[in-house]
Length: 240
Image (cartoon, rainbow, N blue to C red; front, top):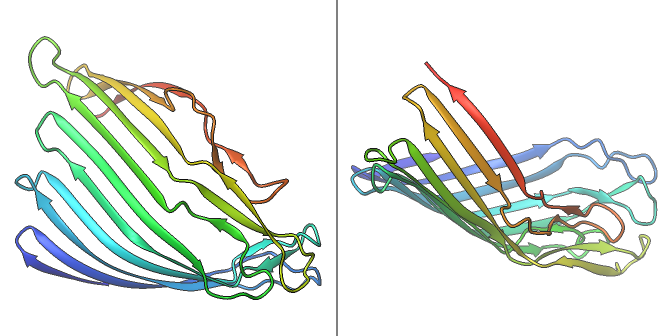
């Protein structure tokens, strides 16, 4: 990777990464699928805003992923490689404190996934959502009658996404079915109180409205998982 400072509070960068991830899965003959391989390159900019209180990042990325193991529908317990899949997109993020009282984090990712090969087994697998975004803001009172109290809220969500499953039993051409689910948006909230600079109490609520949604889809009969329901967590932390 290379980073170049173009001004006092702005820099541009580029990076290249190779992927080599061993896999333990084997095909119907007991032959190991082999390692998942590929590469990723990325170019972006980072800039400080609001007198260096907020960091802005924007990046363009290209990821090619080969030989990812997926289950062989004709031989349960066996796997096939998925061929060559490319994902390109843009990742934009903002984080920091526009004012001393306000903390903000926000992000958006656009990802376009394309299958580069048409061999049997090459086109099925989980497809990442095309659009995903999140935002969370928290305001902490630094003086006045509510000094020490903090209130936060945010949302996160994705667009529709799907998976492709080959039901041909290994024949060519593959017969693909599309397992699709709607996108979702869930809300989160937080209330905190600082007793002093060392002790804080915090109440976090995720998925405030208890939305029912799929976080992942994979195959017709298995590998489809619901997202986490409403969760409430209270904790007290102390630091020196």
